[in-house]
Image 1 (cartoon, rainbow, N blue to C red):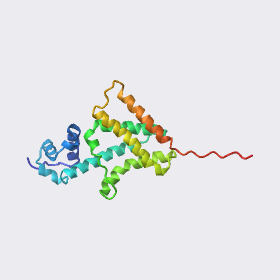
Image 2: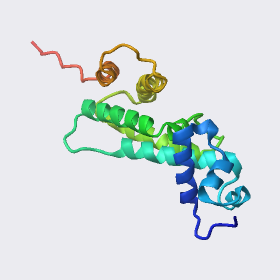
Image 3: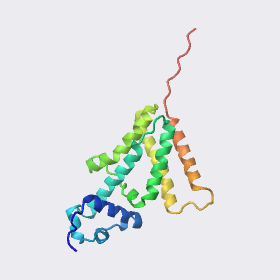
Image 4: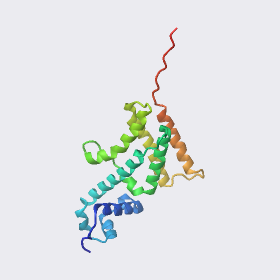
Length: 199
């Protein structure tokens, strides 16, 4: 097997995503990607800096997918409806692409990988805009976004690992969990204090 003519980074990443979603991110290897593409493993180094570089590309891809979810706006949609839709779409992404979803972790810190940090921060910026527009104090937005994400991630992690054995509908349980989180977030909206009537 020689170098495959016309092979692109996008094709390498797509193949890696397929393998990660089937086998789990930890079991996605350069050898498996190369075998599926019909090339020798060293040929992948023309496109990525080894396994670490390929996993970094998957993280970028995952960040773009999540960014697409969080940047979508629906006319006349309330903040409550937007947050619930974001939650449903984020869960759907995680369940449909479990390996790619894993690539979002660990999240880089400022100064570690500025390009990847910016890509992963972009969805947060979109959510902050939604919250600040309805009056959530700006210094609380990141904390509340983390809270919402923790609820979704914790639920999805249990769901993926068959952690819900009771017969009640799992979708209904997810909606209830999101309702609790969203209602809690929107309770932090600061409303103007009404002026006291004079006289």
